[in-house]
Amino acid sequence: MRDLKSKVILGVLSMVVVFTLSVQFQTIRDTTGGELLSTQRSQALAIELRNLQEERDQLTNELTDLENRLQEYEQTDADENLIIQNLRRDLQRYQLISGHVSGQGPGIIITIDSQGDEGDFLLYNYDILLALANNLNAAGAEAIEINGERYTALTEIYYGSNSIHINDRPINPPFEIKAVGHGDTLEAALNIRYGIIWEIRQFRGVNVEITKEDSIFIERAQDITEFKYAEPVTETN
Amino acid sequence: MKKTRDKIIIGVTVFFVSFMMVTNIRNTELDYDFIRLETVEAFNVEISGIKKEIGALEEHIEQKKYQIEEYQEAVQDGTLEEILAAEVQKLKMNSHLTALKGPGITVTLEDSDRELEEGEDPNNLIIHDLDVLNILNDLRRAGAEALAINGQRVTSQTQIQCQGATITVNDVTYGQPFIIEAIGNPDTLNAAINAPTSYSYILREFYELPVGSKSSDEILINAFDREPALNYIEIQEGD
Image (cartoon, rainbow over all chains, first blue to last red; front, side):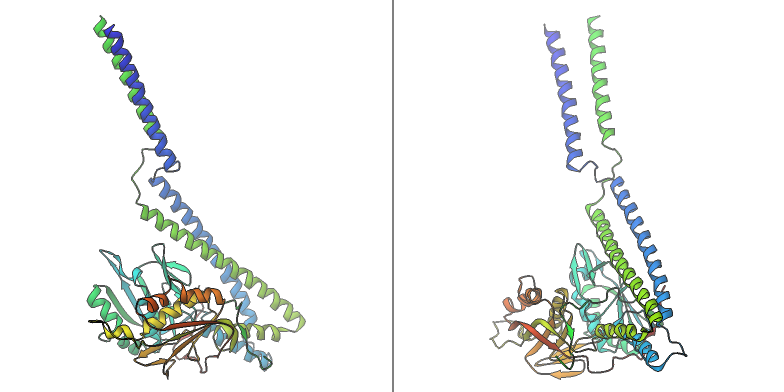
């Protein structure tokens, strides 16, 4: 009797153990949506990212081709009449001013490495970028680019999802700010005592490097503003 | 005899239990180094960023294709001039060299004339560069299509400097009140100045600085009244 009882108990206990374990694993599977936060998942994401990058690069090439073709129509031809020549020249000038064509010139490059023990300082104080752009303009900067984003009159900067967004696109540290203008003036203006750069170096231990260059390439703005509310003022209105 | 038989039974049972456990574990992928949630998040942010880029690229490609078609037709028709003129006009607007009008908002800023609390920093009572810069930024986020401060058009080269009771914009100095105008959707622009998440809200509620705003059906914003500086930069086509 005793023997049978112990065997039954043992049998039942084993089944309970197996059952509990199965339920446990099933629960884990269900709560993590079928996959654990495993290297598999991050591999899948890495693959998706790479595919998207390839697609993006392909599209970029296609866009460049189209732009080259477009240029053939937009470039000045000595035989053409004066009006069209002037129009073409105006076109180029406005493309440059509005930031819709890339440019190059002498200037400076600022590299900010703001990653600290408490996270990235600049991420939570992104308005420092606003102040920097302002200071650069005050020192005569003619074009500014931050991590590939052209700074325009309507450029917005905000923080969301652990990234800084410029022109509504996420960018990540380290931050590289390029400015075209008179290199010496720009450099001096930034290094001024009690200025923004001075402050973040002194009090925040942020690493800032400023280098002068003879030729800096500035990306063009990716978005052309569609004016939905504003319209030009003409003589009649 | 009985004892050996029992041991065998126990042994076999334990074997089966272990077998089931191992099979179960295998089925749920033992290959887990747990990935930090931040890494997955970082991937997702990048992926969504690239998707946006792709979207923008596709739009641009459509635009360029359309333009090329137009030019091709124009060359045949002889209306190249018109097409170029329209393109010039559009880019001139994007260069902020065109006077614009439309619905929008007017924001007024002034230093505070309240009394300082004990031990309070007098800087709390005046408007600073960053205040104006943040308000402009909020307005841009809300879709402003054109901005001006005391009548000065804001361009990509605009700089502002607050010095006590005056503000210098585009090298021109103005007294108070500082008036910021923006053309865009009056409701979203209004939220940019009055919502609890806005920078202006903090100025008003926390520092008690007078920040006023008024929506309007017609705001007039001047063109930038000078030649933008183009002494150092020149066109350089990228790859």
